[in-house]
Amino acid sequence: MTANVAQQFRDLSQSKQQTLREQGYVNVPLEFSSSEPMTGHAGAVMVSNYYMASGLAKLLDENVSLDYHGWRYSKDQLMHQLIQMCACGVGCVDRAEQMQGDPVFRHARGMDNDSCAQNLRRFQQRLAEADGAKDLQDTLTAYGSDLVPVSDTLRFVMDLSTQQSWGHQEGVKSGRLGDGRFRNCCSWLVGGEATTQQVLTADFYPGGANGRPLFSEHVDRLMQAARQISGSREVLVEVRCDGGFFSWDNVDHVKNMDHVQYLMPMDMQPGTLNRVQGLSYEPSRLAEIAAREGRKLTHTEKTKKIHYEYAEFIYTSKSSNRTDDRVVVRRRPKPSVDEPQKLLFWNPKYEFSAMTTNHPGTPEEAWLAYDKGGIVEQIIENGKQGCGWAWFAANSFEVNRVSFLLKVLAQNLLRGLQQQVLDRCCSRLQIDTLIRDVIQIPARLVRRGRGWVMKAFCDHPMARVLRRAQLEVLTLALPDPG
Image (cartoon, rainbow, N blue to C red; front, side):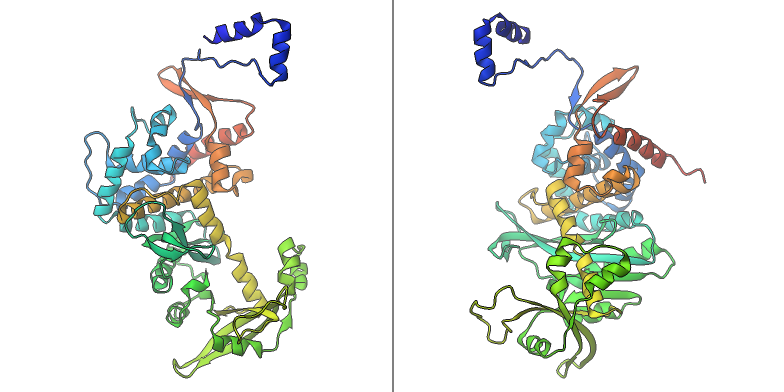
């Protein structure tokens, strides 16, 4: 049929061919003569091998206590398939048929067939009924800690995010989204290490969850991860969290920990606003700090941060007997002071922000340290765009919770792949870009002897990266000679 289409075009008169070309018709017919299977995920084998070599498969086998005996697939095989789906950009269980039509996925795991979407949903339901979320949280902390290198300072970041629900899932309640609207939603809390972007603690919550009562549990998990990362060494741990976690009980909880430096914005109540308006502020010394560090000011620093002014005070309260909490404040002139002010106690000339901290530096240095922790928003955005965090797996809340934690593990897997295997040029790619440019590369699956070989385009921009990455994964998978 294809040959007939090409020949039919050539049999047309020159005038008709010219007319079709002028209309935009191109005579490049599609042929189906190749008998070898094709794949759109040439990097899926590398992801699967790294899943084994990095120790994630072993940790899941040790931590997940579910006693599952499928008639065709084991617990390990189904978890491997679920995490590989998310790591390759197929984050929705209903899209499992894409893997069944792509031969490289099952060849990567040594399987004759992939499990269908119905069986994967049933497995996640069984995992949720066996308290699998707790097991996956333990796996997440252990796996992320193994991928964070030891250093003298560990910077942990935490954030609570909401995701709008479009269906009828359990646990959906009305909550405020990031744009200020109230919609039916669920929430997730994420805490990770800022440099490697490894998530060390995460959980899924109904509705628009309140971060204050959740803070201590996740900070304790971060401290557990810090002990595992550092071993017997004493390292400084910096914990940066948003204002949604602020309460004096949470401040006391983290302040009583050894070698912990916290940065926690405060709620701007009327009493606090009256206090900060009477302080003596100093102008920003950002230009001096940048010159001392040997760098130039960024665009954001030139247009925004250079206009901040800073001050500090010691918070005191007779009702709670608080006398030693340091509060650093920054203010910035408002762009316009002509707009009517709804709050009478608000100074119309400035915008204020206050933060309680035990940071040893100046107020400006404390705020600059806080701004560096904005990487947690990037972690969440990567999870949503690359690994399908925003997709709900089922109507059951616990199944959605298990599915979310599996997707977080998939993101940690990809971040570890970037740091340990890929070239430096790919080490800071966004997750969705990594999947699109490195993993989702077309290739042809060809028989060679008794095995299979994938043939990809030799001049592909990532050909050199993939060739080197295969060797790195093989080296990582080899047993330690010691």
